[in-house]
Length: 226
Image 1 (tube, rainbow, N blue to C red):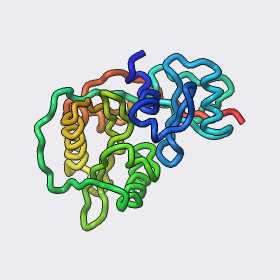
Image 2 (cartoon, rainbow, N blue to C red):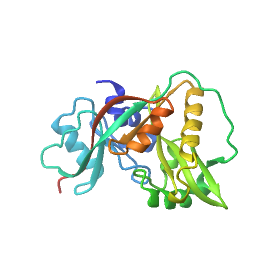
Image 3 (cartoon, rainbow, N blue to C red):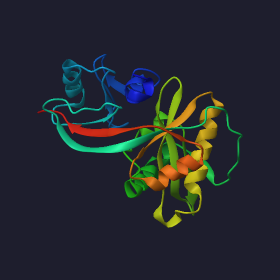
Protein backbone atom coordinates (compact mmCIF):
# COMPACT_ATOMS: atom_id res chain seq x y z
CA UNK A 1 0.00 0.00 0.00
CA UNK A 2 1.33 3.45 -0.92
CA UNK A 3 1.41 6.27 1.63
CA UNK A 4 -1.43 8.14 -0.11
CA UNK A 5 -3.67 5.07 0.16
CA UNK A 6 -3.58 5.55 3.95
CA UNK A 7 -2.44 9.16 4.23
CA UNK A 8 -3.79 9.92 7.70
CA UNK A 9 -1.86 7.03 9.25
CA UNK A 10 1.40 8.19 7.73
CA UNK A 11 0.71 11.82 8.67
CA UNK A 12 -0.11 10.90 12.27
CA UNK A 13 3.00 8.73 12.55
CA UNK A 14 5.18 11.26 10.75
CA UNK A 15 5.16 15.06 10.42
CA UNK A 16 1.98 15.50 12.48
CA UNK A 17 2.71 13.09 15.31
CA UNK A 18 2.62 15.96 17.84
CA UNK A 19 -1.03 16.55 16.91
CA UNK A 20 -1.99 12.92 17.58
CA UNK A 21 -2.63 10.41 20.29
CA UNK A 22 -2.52 6.62 20.23
CA UNK A 23 0.12 3.99 19.59
CA UNK A 24 1.56 1.72 16.91
CA UNK A 25 -1.81 0.00 16.44
CA UNK A 26 -4.06 3.06 16.08
CA UNK A 27 -3.79 6.82 16.15
CA UNK A 28 -6.11 9.80 15.88
CA UNK A 29 -5.78 13.55 15.70
CA UNK A 30 -6.29 15.29 19.03
CA UNK A 31 -10.00 15.90 19.54
CA UNK A 32 -9.79 19.68 19.12
CA UNK A 33 -7.66 19.34 15.96
CA UNK A 34 -9.57 16.91 13.70
CA UNK A 35 -11.92 13.93 13.76
CA UNK A 36 -9.80 11.53 11.69
CA UNK A 37 -8.52 8.24 13.04
CA UNK A 38 -6.18 5.76 11.39
CA UNK A 39 -4.92 2.20 11.58
CA UNK A 40 -1.93 0.53 9.85
CA UNK A 41 -1.85 -0.29 6.15
CA UNK A 42 -2.85 -3.89 6.87
CA UNK A 43 -5.08 -3.58 9.94
CA UNK A 44 -5.87 -6.45 12.30
CA UNK A 45 -8.69 -6.88 14.79
CA UNK A 46 -6.44 -5.71 17.61
CA UNK A 47 -5.72 -2.47 15.71
CA UNK A 48 -9.42 -1.62 15.63
CA UNK A 49 -9.65 -2.57 19.29
CA UNK A 50 -6.91 -0.05 19.96
CA UNK A 51 -8.71 2.57 17.85
CA UNK A 52 -11.80 2.01 19.99
CA UNK A 53 -9.77 2.80 23.09
CA UNK A 54 -8.24 5.89 21.49
CA UNK A 55 -11.50 7.46 20.32
CA UNK A 56 -13.55 6.14 23.24
CA UNK A 57 -16.42 3.62 23.27
CA UNK A 58 -19.47 5.06 21.57
CA UNK A 59 -17.49 7.86 19.93
CA UNK A 60 -16.99 8.46 16.22
CA UNK A 61 -13.90 7.90 14.09
CA UNK A 62 -13.49 8.97 10.47
CA UNK A 63 -11.31 6.75 8.27
CA UNK A 64 -9.80 8.08 5.04
CA UNK A 65 -8.09 5.16 3.33
CA UNK A 66 -8.37 3.36 0.02
CA UNK A 67 -9.61 0.04 1.40
CA UNK A 68 -11.80 1.30 4.24
CA UNK A 69 -13.90 -1.62 5.49
CA UNK A 70 -16.20 -1.38 8.52
CA UNK A 71 -14.73 -3.55 11.29
CA UNK A 72 -16.93 -5.98 13.16
CA UNK A 73 -19.31 -4.44 15.74
CA UNK A 74 -18.61 -0.85 14.64
CA UNK A 75 -21.69 1.11 13.55
CA UNK A 76 -21.47 2.79 10.15
CA UNK A 77 -22.77 6.34 10.61
CA UNK A 78 -22.10 7.39 7.03
CA UNK A 79 -20.03 6.36 4.02
CA UNK A 80 -19.47 8.31 0.82
CA UNK A 81 -17.05 8.27 -2.08
CA UNK A 82 -14.28 10.83 -2.36
CA UNK A 83 -11.87 11.56 -5.18
CA UNK A 84 -8.18 11.86 -4.33
CA UNK A 85 -6.39 14.27 -6.65
CA UNK A 86 -2.69 15.07 -7.08
CA UNK A 87 -1.36 18.46 -8.11
CA UNK A 88 1.76 19.49 -10.05
CA UNK A 89 5.14 18.33 -8.76
CA UNK A 90 7.21 21.17 -10.24
CA UNK A 91 7.37 24.53 -8.44
CA UNK A 92 4.81 27.03 -9.69
CA UNK A 93 5.56 30.64 -10.46
CA UNK A 94 4.57 32.87 -7.57
CA UNK A 95 1.69 35.27 -8.08
CA UNK A 96 0.48 38.07 -5.83
CA UNK A 97 -3.19 38.50 -5.01
CA UNK A 98 -3.71 41.45 -2.67
CA UNK A 99 -7.00 39.99 -1.45
CA UNK A 100 -5.31 37.02 0.24
CA UNK A 101 -4.15 37.18 3.86
CA UNK A 102 -2.63 34.60 6.19
CA UNK A 103 -4.97 33.46 8.96
CA UNK A 104 -3.99 32.68 12.52
CA UNK A 105 -5.11 32.42 16.11
CA UNK A 106 -7.04 35.71 16.07
CA UNK A 107 -9.07 34.44 13.10
CA UNK A 108 -10.22 31.13 14.61
CA UNK A 109 -13.76 32.23 15.48
CA UNK A 110 -14.23 33.60 11.96
CA UNK A 111 -12.89 30.39 10.42
CA UNK A 112 -15.25 28.31 12.54
CA UNK A 113 -18.17 30.52 11.58
CA UNK A 114 -17.37 30.34 7.85
CA UNK A 115 -16.90 26.57 7.84
CA UNK A 116 -20.10 26.05 9.85
CA UNK A 117 -22.03 27.80 7.07
CA UNK A 118 -20.24 26.46 4.01
CA UNK A 119 -19.61 22.85 5.18
CA UNK A 120 -16.26 22.11 3.46
CA UNK A 121 -15.66 19.21 5.84
CA UNK A 122 -14.62 18.75 9.47
CA UNK A 123 -13.00 21.83 10.99
CA UNK A 124 -12.18 22.17 14.69
CA UNK A 125 -10.78 24.97 16.85
CA UNK A 126 -7.15 23.86 16.34
CA UNK A 127 -7.36 22.57 12.77
CA UNK A 128 -5.61 25.71 11.50
CA UNK A 129 -2.46 24.69 13.39
CA UNK A 130 -1.86 21.78 10.98
CA UNK A 131 -0.55 24.09 8.25
CA UNK A 132 -0.83 27.51 6.64
CA UNK A 133 -4.37 28.84 6.24
CA UNK A 134 -5.15 31.63 3.80
CA UNK A 135 -8.29 33.73 3.57
CA UNK A 136 -10.04 36.67 1.95
CA UNK A 137 -11.97 39.30 3.89
CA UNK A 138 -14.60 41.76 2.69
CA UNK A 139 -15.50 44.69 4.92
CA UNK A 140 -13.68 42.87 7.71
CA UNK A 141 -15.70 39.65 7.34
CA UNK A 142 -13.98 36.38 6.37
CA UNK A 143 -15.66 35.28 3.12
CA UNK A 144 -13.32 32.58 1.75
CA UNK A 145 -10.42 30.41 2.81
CA UNK A 146 -8.25 27.40 2.02
CA UNK A 147 -5.75 25.63 4.25
CA UNK A 148 -3.35 22.73 4.71
CA UNK A 149 -4.43 19.65 6.68
CA UNK A 150 -2.72 16.23 6.49
CA UNK A 151 0.99 16.17 5.65
CA UNK A 152 3.41 13.38 4.87
CA UNK A 153 7.09 13.58 4.00
CA UNK A 154 6.21 14.25 0.36
CA UNK A 155 2.63 15.55 0.17
CA UNK A 156 0.49 18.31 1.71
CA UNK A 157 -3.30 18.10 1.60
CA UNK A 158 -5.20 21.26 0.67
CA UNK A 159 -8.40 21.39 2.69
CA UNK A 160 -11.23 23.60 4.01
CA UNK A 161 -11.66 25.25 0.63
CA UNK A 162 -14.81 27.31 1.02
CA UNK A 163 -16.46 30.56 -0.07
CA UNK A 164 -19.44 32.41 1.36
CA UNK A 165 -22.47 31.84 -0.88
CA UNK A 166 -22.76 35.58 -1.61
CA UNK A 167 -19.27 35.65 -3.13
CA UNK A 168 -19.22 32.43 -5.16
CA UNK A 169 -18.20 33.00 -8.78
CA UNK A 170 -15.64 35.73 -8.09
CA UNK A 171 -12.59 33.46 -8.38
CA UNK A 172 -11.78 33.41 -4.68
CA UNK A 173 -11.55 29.63 -4.39
CA UNK A 174 -9.36 29.45 -7.49
CA UNK A 175 -7.03 32.15 -6.16
CA UNK A 176 -6.73 30.56 -2.72
CA UNK A 177 -6.06 27.04 -4.01
CA UNK A 178 -3.51 28.42 -6.49
CA UNK A 179 -1.76 30.28 -3.66
CA UNK A 180 -1.64 27.07 -1.62
CA UNK A 181 -0.20 25.16 -4.58
CA UNK A 182 2.52 27.79 -4.96
CA UNK A 183 3.45 27.58 -1.28
CA UNK A 184 3.52 23.77 -1.22
CA UNK A 185 5.56 23.30 -4.39
CA UNK A 186 7.99 26.01 -3.21
CA UNK A 187 9.04 23.79 -0.27
CA UNK A 188 9.54 20.78 -2.53
CA UNK A 189 6.32 18.96 -1.67
CA UNK A 190 3.37 17.91 -3.82
CA UNK A 191 -0.11 19.41 -3.28
CA UNK A 192 -3.01 16.97 -3.12
CA UNK A 193 -6.60 17.03 -1.94
CA UNK A 194 -9.78 15.07 -1.40
CA UNK A 195 -13.19 16.05 -2.76
CA UNK A 196 -16.56 14.39 -2.41
CA UNK A 197 -17.21 12.51 -5.65
CA UNK A 198 -20.54 14.33 -5.97
CA UNK A 199 -18.89 17.77 -5.78
CA UNK A 200 -18.41 18.04 -9.53
CA UNK A 201 -18.05 21.83 -9.48
CA UNK A 202 -15.05 21.68 -7.14
CA UNK A 203 -13.51 18.76 -9.04
CA UNK A 204 -13.76 20.73 -12.29
CA UNK A 205 -11.99 23.68 -10.62
CA UNK A 206 -9.18 21.45 -9.36
CA UNK A 207 -8.77 19.87 -12.79
CA UNK A 208 -8.53 23.36 -14.29
CA UNK A 209 -5.73 24.13 -11.82
CA UNK A 210 -3.78 21.06 -12.91
CA UNK A 211 -4.86 18.40 -10.43
CA UNK A 212 -5.22 14.85 -11.73
CA UNK A 213 -7.36 12.02 -10.41
CA UNK A 214 -5.40 9.40 -8.50
CA UNK A 215 -8.22 7.20 -7.20
CA UNK A 216 -11.71 7.11 -5.72
CA UNK A 217 -12.42 5.48 -2.39
CA UNK A 218 -14.94 5.67 0.46
CA UNK A 219 -14.69 7.90 3.50
CA UNK A 220 -16.01 5.88 6.40
CA UNK A 221 -17.62 7.53 9.43
CA UNK A 222 -18.19 4.94 12.13
CA UNK A 223 -19.05 4.68 15.81
CA UNK A 224 -16.95 2.56 18.17
CA UNK A 225 -18.69 -0.26 20.05
CA UNK A 226 -19.86 0.73 23.55
